[in-house]
Image (cartoon, rainbow, N blue to C red; front, top):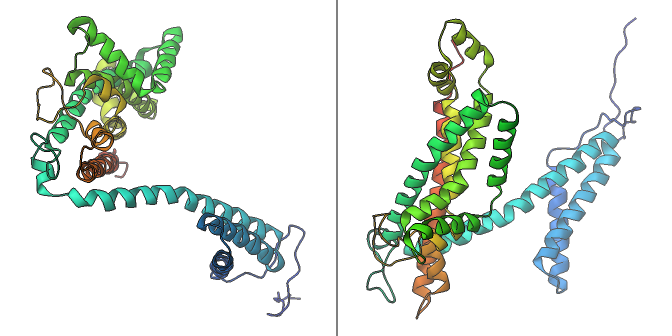
Length: 360
């Protein structure tokens, strides 16, 4: 004897089972329509009273979440209503988190685009009092100091990570790991003061050099490289090391020929993200490098300009009239955001194209 499952009539509410489930479902457009109605009510109240747009958004979120939950509970049952409630809360939290980011990007792009011209990239501020001028000297200073920071930090960071993963054991390993974690949380101004104090011992107080800025940024970059490289090296399967040892290959050669090539994508990504971490630092460079209006490409001779410090001084000491310097500050900020974004894109590309191939 066969049985046939039947659905309840379209206009009737299906009974929930013991787990709070129902066979009826809300159309996909209903939650959006509910939030739209909630927004219309909230902003309609705003039009009649004097409360702000922020309160209207908050009322929209609260009304939309509560209405969606109540409607889903009455139609779909308790389990799906709870799922919709959590989904609505998470989505609203994401939207709220995106508001300051989108606002920041919009503000920087809209204001920074005013001076995004050829003069900004090929001229300095020598002899410039009001309109005109550029940030060529600051761009060159940022590139030179970042390159020196990378040359200092990457070998030290990678070798430290290799030592921690492949060689270190016991108390020494725990001590190094502890100090690396402490360095990760060091305030950037402390790194600048350390570099200044170090060079002041040899060159006297008041010294300002590009290499000082590179040393200060290295203090911030080395622990980031160590931690990222350490985690990547731990992901290399031990079977690859053991297979190499079984063939009689020494440990150092196994690291060079097996471990590092296997982890090269992750190492490159970690290094690129570490560079993006320090390229926009301002406080250490204020203490160690200072500012100048002229182009100086020698990091061992005098002050150098960098984009973060350039933007800081253009905003805090704009001169008269202030509008021209403030426009230059916004454009420098836009360049820094573009530089950091470009480094993150490069990190993604390295991770994608240099990852070891697992297919046959």
